[in-house]
Amino acid sequence: MSSPEELNFESGNVKLSLIQYRNTFNHGTTVWDSSVITAYYMQSLLNSYNPIKKNMTCIELGSGCGLLGLVMCSLGFETTLTDLAAVVDDVLKENVRRNLFIFNNQPQNNENFQHKAYVKVLDWTTQLSSDFTPPYDYIVASDCIYSLDLIPYFAKCLYDLSGDKSVIVCGMERRDPIVIDNFLNECKEKYSFNISKIPVSKVKKILKRINNLNDEKLTQVEIYRLKKIDV
Image (cartoon, rainbow, N blue to C red; front, top):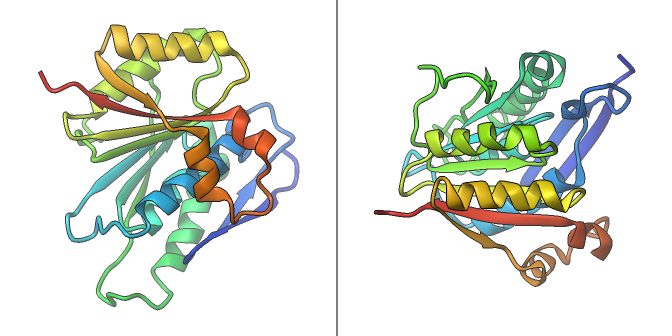
């Protein structure tokens, strides 16, 4: 494996320090644009939200380097970050460890509050184990779907981890329209999710203060909100 690169993320009061490896055969060891943009979007959207008082939980699927899940943790969600074992061992555990230490050793509005984040191995193709405690209040993911073969497993995982009140947010870069369209169709037709796309104009408005995100990147990344239909 190549030497690690350090990536710093900053938005509002949130500051993260991540390691990534670009020159590997595993795309989970790199921070991708969809993760960055979705993380900025969620931080801006929920910045005034207070999940601490409600003891709200979040799980990130396909965490990779953990940027999106760590942003949710920084906001006060008790967050579980997941990926395959190789990614967990290569980057995810270390990134969660170093940033959880930062979160819990900086001045807090509530000095008694401790941020909580857990790292767990999750293979979507296997049955969900008792290590997981659905339903989660928020389920987040970015750039998880890049193959048609993964779609049935990923969609079922979203269904199994969510409840009627769960909010699911998926950020995806439209590299292959067929993959994204099939994923959305699977979620809608087989699992009856209500699906809405966050307008690019809304994302641009939220992210306009971020100098290093240009319009081209914004238009390539799509953010979807999914909810189970209460029947």
